[in-house]
Image 1 (tube, rainbow, N blue to C red):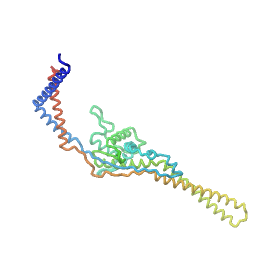
Image 2: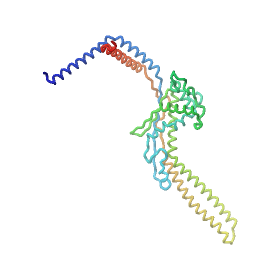
Image 3: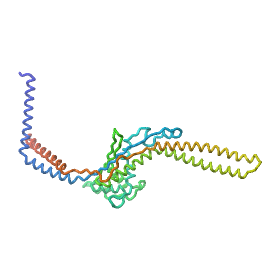
Image 4: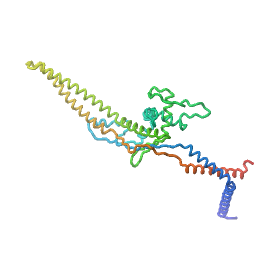
Length: 359
């Protein structure tokens, strides 16, 4: 009786031998069917030509920018105003990813879509209609399978920009345009420098450029407006208050001057009472007006200090970067696919023949 260790060694030996024989048999099969592999290689080259011809040029427009957002230290009203964080800010911490998420919101897209521009000297139209034409040219707008009737959005173009009165089909088109718009956007933020990047891609160079620049403009303006919305409301309220006090103070001063003119040279003490009361009212108004002016200036400083500043670093310029599959890469990809399919085909034939599944 042999020891167990010797038995395991013998089994391992035969397993390795079988693996070598199995590999050798498949290599022999591949050599025997070299014509099939050559045919697969030729078909792969043809596939590479198809890949090259069907892959359109893709243009990229990238915007890099940074956010400067600081909070000063003012007393009085500004300290109260500083407690309101606006829509996007949270104290001194800036969530850069939230800004980039805003770039993908439908709110920002709607502001861009309904701007009228002219591309390459053509007729002026909504930017969203130019986007629809681009997607139609590559078959991504309103696709419908052969077994269904035409898509209801086929041939659709926006004729108006009043979103509140949109009908169902217009809302459907807006949602689909937004989804296609999102497929063109890539965003990222640098962990080291806090620089933010917006990357727009598309098959139309001018349209891609316009989408990228308009997206950055609307995003930065929307962020600034919403960040200081509460502070602006407070400042406007104080400005209206000071204007009202100033107007009332001017009226009372004119009334006091009129009373003094009317009762000049009078010896009656009772006639001095209205002038005295009005003079007291004027002094009180002056104190209130001075305090209101102080609060208004402090609110103005707080608003200026609270307003974020979005600084573009690099804006896209024409001509844009063009990505296109080169002929060597396309042919190499086709050859790899063809050879892989050829080896797979020969391997399956040998496996089925050796196993006798179909006998």
